[in-house]
Length: 126
Image 1 (spheres, one colour):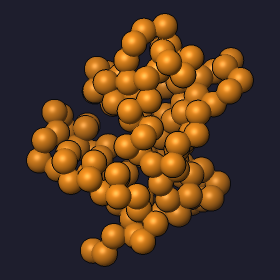
Image 2 (cartoon, rainbow, N blue to C red):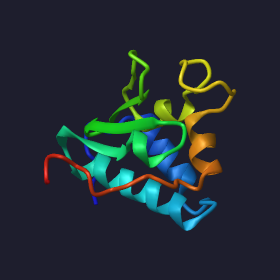
Image 3 (cartoon, rainbow, N blue to C red):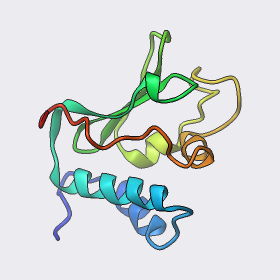
């Protein structure tokens, strides 16, 4: 399958590095699903991967267009906008004001084994 011409080189490298190095089935599903979507699925109305009720830290993660992501938290006015998944997963949740502990989004997702992440809320197809 050809890679979408809009996919960032950082995400191409991330997906390649993760392939075969998943720590769980949920992690594999996360990366394989997002790789497919970045390559093939435009989301103008947003793809809600994680919503506040889905986790005790009240975080949300939304994919927009092909590879842009919004990361935020309930009751925090300023959400974070990232151009690709690699940048999003590298976000330190303490530094961006979403949690009180020093942890990246990638570490946070791994720690909870991607619990709460869903792939059935792409509002373009609902």
